[in-house]
Amino acid sequence: MLYTIQKSIQFTLSLLIMKKIVPIEEGDYYLTPEGYRCFTEQYHLKRGYCCESGCRHCPYGYNKATNSIKK
Image (cartoon, rainbow, N blue to C red):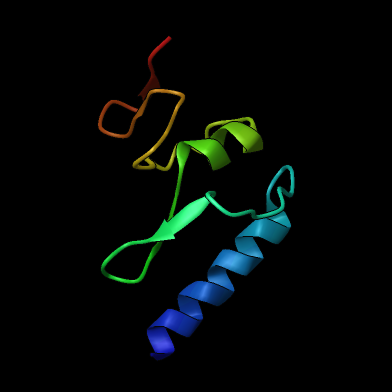
């Protein structure tokens, strides 16, 4: 439970220091079976840039293994 609270705090802090704060709306993320927030392609497109974290639904084609974005 404490770990979940810590992740929630980290998530909130990351939103505050992002280049652009994007309000979270329905359909922007879902909870994985492990309890993590997983951002959808909809959210990534609203945000407008690739964070280069290897996100599961990255619409920008980022490959974490090669540290490159498909054009």
